[in-house]
Image 1 (cartoon, rainbow, N blue to C red):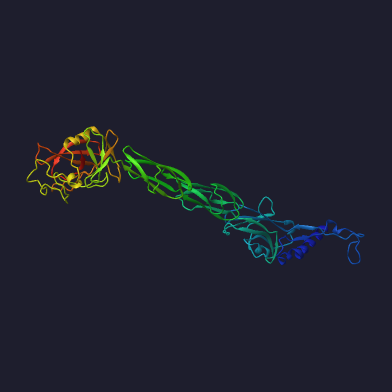
Image 2: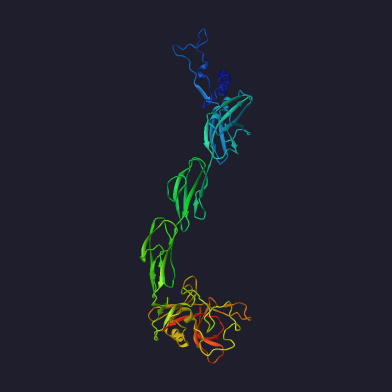
Amino acid sequence: MKNKLFFATLFFAVLAFGFVGCENPDSESGISIEKPDDDSTSDKPNDSDGSEQDGNTKPTTPEAPTLVATGDATEVGRSSVKLWGRINTDTLWAFNNVKWGIECSTTKEAIHSHSGNKTLCSTDLVGENSDEYAVAFTGLEEGKMLYYNAYLLINDIKYIYGEMDSVHLDVILTINTNNSSYGTVTGSGTYDHLAEATITATPKENYYFTGWSDCDSKELTRTITLTSDSTITANFAKKPYLTVKSNNTSYGTVTGSGYYMPGDEVTITATPKLGSEFVKWSDGNTDNTRTVIVNEDITYNAIFELIVSGTENGFGYIDLGLPSGLKWAVCNVGATKPEEYGNYYAWGESFTKSSYTSLNYKYFFDPPTTLPRDAAAVNMGGEWRMPTYDELNELKTECIWKYTRDYGAGKEGIIVVGKNGNHIFLPVAGYRDSSDSYVHDYHYAGSCGFYWSSSLNAGESLKAYCLEISVSGTVFLCNQYLYYGMSVRGVLD
């Protein structure tokens, strides 16, 4: 009799109190149902109004267990989660049409007003306990806070709600670089909400890290706590490059070129070679060793000059310390710098031509027996002249010959060093021959050089002696046809 009275009382209590759940949407608390104590059916006498007689003590009604409780979230992902709830099945026997489910929303207000997304459980009760059930949600708004509660639906009309809870879906951390050619980063990925992620920035060679986009930190490695989807950029920059150059590597060398951090102080030097001197830097500074501050790409040119022994009629000459005392011109006739090829002359002619053939050679039909005109004397004036065969041979035997790939302006040739350390440079200008039997006019430019002497070859008609040099290192005296256009280097007694 006591049990029947208890369940009858419970049934009406659920209807009376449980249905209030949907009428008080602002409450986050579950709806509980009251039931009488086991002593509520005692044989105590009642007053005439039906109340129990218990002296001065009023009857009490303890709170009954909650009908539905919101559980927890499991299998939390980027846009999916499994939510579960618990039902007090002992109190549901009196209801014929009871369903259970989960309500969720990314806004707390929707749960307060019970207007969230309600999903009924599609299976029977599951789990270790027969009073637990779970619902999997997918396709949720990524990386958001999700609010939820469990509920009961009675007779498809009345709702009873559990307490609201919340879970934050997984968040994405994206680490970018301002330029992937400058550096690399790590740390991107999907993380639990409030997880700690370690991010790193690694600059590539000749680049440096300038900082993160979200803070003033310049630490290459740092740890952050993830509260939402985040994108952070690692900023890199190119180190400024200091270029230190020599106007002529055969005159002098320099040091100091390289990549540096902004603000670095760098020592640069200019060291002249034997027979040359340092004049100044391109910015006018005359200290061959100096300190510069690098804040951006910058170039300093060291200007060296060949030490000229003297000049004759405006043209410089070099004393190589030869036994004969002969002085050699700094440049080929027609050139203004040692590395320039200068003009080409047929033997005995002092003018240039557009083509060089046997038929347009001035002395082809009347071969000379001595030098008719001296190209050096005519074009340089003063005491300048062409060297003789013996003087070319003296240069060959009394000096050291060194091949260089770049004497200046990328020109190859031979550095001729005298016993006193002074030197001249002979570019490999080739020669010119425009005869019909040849496909082109210039021959061996960049690989061989040919320099006229003033001496004829008495044994062969229309030939004179010359000095032939090549990038392979060979130096010898030979003879060539007089109508060939070749280089001339002047000398002084």
